[in-house]
Image (cartoon, rainbow, N blue to C red; front, top):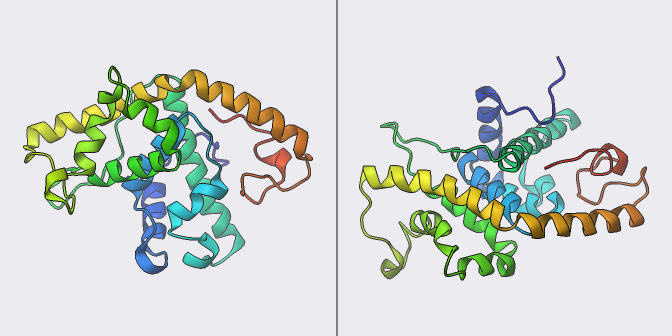
Length: 231
């Protein structure tokens, strides 16, 4: 059965992706929770970030060096899982659907959310200047406060750490991260669509349909960004 490129990953596929990332060399690859937050920030931001730029962040370096693939089929499998997860997040945000961050739980079944916040902040750092506008916005910057709280919860600098967080407060903060993500997505929507239109025009002018896609997927342009619409 053919799997649609926009279909959400199953639990088994999420486990497969998480296990693969955990086995990349040096242990610098993101875990699944961090990846979810990272993708969320990249998708919500004002500027497009291509896979060729963000893959090294995901894999902890060039994936050809940091990850062991047993075959070309496995390469396509893992990159396909990443694309589908990206599209799941993008589709939910585009349609205004509430999205709860994908969080791991500890041995007691408690989700902490710190890795998701770390991933989100890493995504923001890839386009620091545009995100700084929202961070410094007196009216809307508070949308990012839940991410900042969990990002700094275990900061090496004690002055950056928030007050101790109760279980009830943590649940509210995690819900706040999901809400803040949607608010950030809407905040940048007009600029993102404008930037995407300009970038798409430039890309079509520069890239032949049979040329390798500039996104770094390894596919022909007509089989990748030149032939599919991703939210």
